[in-house]
Amino acid sequence: MYEELDPKIVDLLTKGGFVNVTGLLPFGGTSSGGEIQVTDPNDFGRFGSNKGKSVIVTPQGEVWLGTHLPESDILAKLCPRGEGARVPCSNGQYLTTFHLLHRLRDPYCSFGGSYSPKPAYWK
Image (cartoon, rainbow, N blue to C red; front, side, top):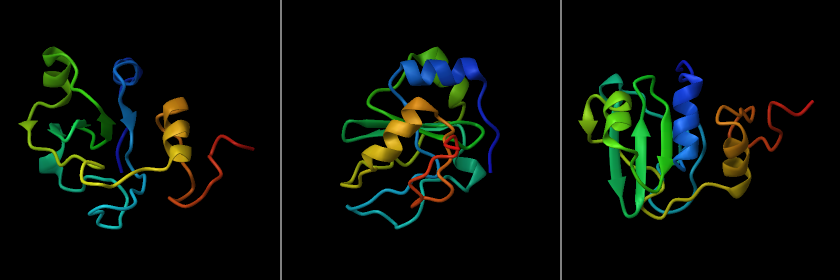
């Protein structure tokens, strides 16, 4: 679906409090029932904020969720199309602690499907 970001950018995002939520399944609220993903290329490279949460949708289509937006020079590089991204988990939806903790450890952790509790790095 997308190519991974440069490791330096991933480091900046994770140190800035962002987690890669691409492909995770939100529960509750006004959730559409599907995995978090951006399928329209016109939405790539955008950012947004809503109810204390911020999102960065990279030019590659990854969705990174945090609590505040990074410095403007980083934001300009990651989001050349500016504001306008939909912010997941900002209307009562939530992600499981299990999935978030694994994505904090490895931003590209794959679970073999949204409901699989076995991360890809377990042998």
